[in-house]
Length: 401
Image 1 (cartoon, rainbow, N blue to C red):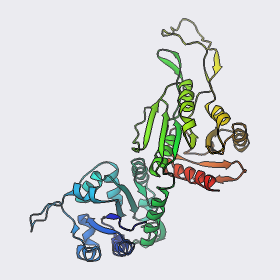
Image 2 (image 1 turned 90 degrees about the horizontal axis):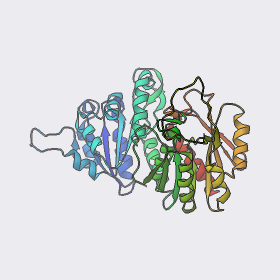
Image 3 (image 1 turned 90 degrees about the vertical axis):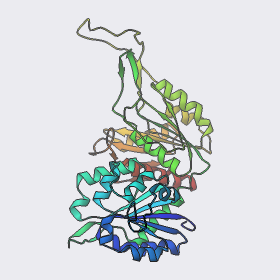
Image 4 (image 1 turned 45 degrees about the vertical axis):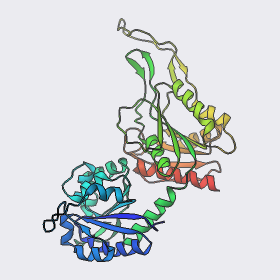
């Protein structure tokens, strides 16, 4: 998978920098060409001469070489790369990346990168669990950066726990597996819906819910990253998203709009993942003027909205796959299994509001999946980017059975 790949290796200032020598050897043995950018602090842990010798390329550490007067063009470096790998990625480097800071050549190169970026965090035990660090990792994931999980073991402080940079062979394996995944939905057309719907009462009021669309957008981006052409039908949300170039977006407001957009696209798709929180009811009549507060009560007559998931289940062909979501507060498994069968789904993703950090509004989620055979897979609390990867991986298993 790495043969003839151009890898830009970024090295920041942590004790794990010594492992980058082996990482370069692994990459070059796999057939990759490697160029190295180091932060000034990284040069205190391993010498540029070592990494230059192993990579057979000049190592860049500063914007300007004072002796030769040459400029290290961070834009050219970024555009040259097929992959950017930052290992070790210290807490400081991760924080600056997450907030768009540009204090050194490595950060400037990262901010100019068009290719996929991988980071291998490395820091001591307490730092690895600090809320600010976790927030920065979540932001980087939302920006599309691939996080190579740190590992447990003996740390430089003498403590034992999570925080060690992944071993060079594990970094290589993670990247190779990700590259394989990126090809597994090439040529496929995917429909995803996300976010809430707003059912108008009058020109200024509506019935809605707390969905932000984060889960569905993460799923759409995951499919797109893995080669698919994605049609995303997105309900009204104030959240700002970064979308993969392979994601085509249709914005809607109401449940009826959602049904119309999905029903139009579904016959052209191989897979549909309906994660949107669509309103079950809408006001029977909508006032064309703002309703005035003229009494102590207001009665709204509500009628059912179109059930997009059920309607798609009715027209689903044998070569199509349909995935639904169930957000439950009680009798979770029974309700989800009933929905799976009743709506002719191939897979259902169960959210329980009993779990802290799961459901609407969070950057994390905790889900279980149930397939047609009744197999249940339960996942830990993870970022929604990682949950999206788990869901797509599970669907891939079903498709390839």
